[in-house]
Length: 300
Image 1 (cartoon, rainbow, N blue to C red):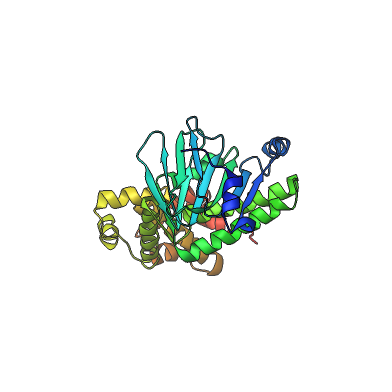
Image 2 (cartoon, rainbow, N blue to C red; image 1 turned 120 degrees about the horizontal axis):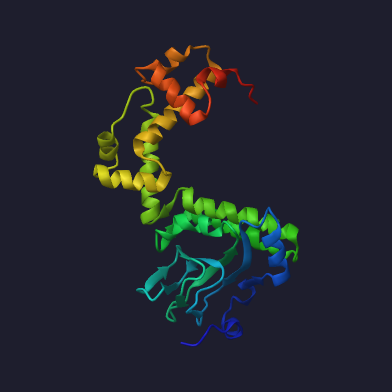
């Protein structure tokens, strides 16, 4: 297959005016990479190809930027590092890490229309990491609409001129877009399934803060085996289920310390701790100070 020829596609497409493409110049990228606010994450390229019949890329060495591609309509495919070809359909999001060999293209029978962003920065890999476990992700319609609104705002900012100011604004928007994908609601996929299971468990935990829960009970609520549930929960939150539950209890105890005159013993009992000394030790470990010192600290 031949490489994508934008001019050929534009002539064939009735959506000429819908095409979008901005490639930021190297001097501006160097400036963004050196500026503290943008050095962690910034856009290098951004665009939209409408019904891109001949869209095809083969990068044996990968791309120096991380790539996000959202398929709004039509179909396409991609493969990474010589792996199996993955089909992409409307509503799908493809995440391609930097410096990893990849190949992708549109199916000619129903060519995709895609929104895409290339990203770099010192923290770009960390932003992308939560998304890479899911393969092809599918955004729910409501979430996709919000994500595209942010995309258009990002593109609109960069369209106003090559400046560090617009790069800074675009950087903040893109960080929000990635946060929505990694930690928000409404995306299907293996990675997001673990987050959904964790979200349901956290809600259950919040409803039982004044009592206790067991790992077996939490796993049953998620309809999973205890080992599988624990793995998914830690993948989504960074903590084991019981450790997270204890953190919620301690977080809630801060509210009692802030807004009531209850004693530490009363608060620990209210939250299901039989031993107030254990509660105080756990509080100090998580908050960095004793319950009494926390209560006496000026806030707001």
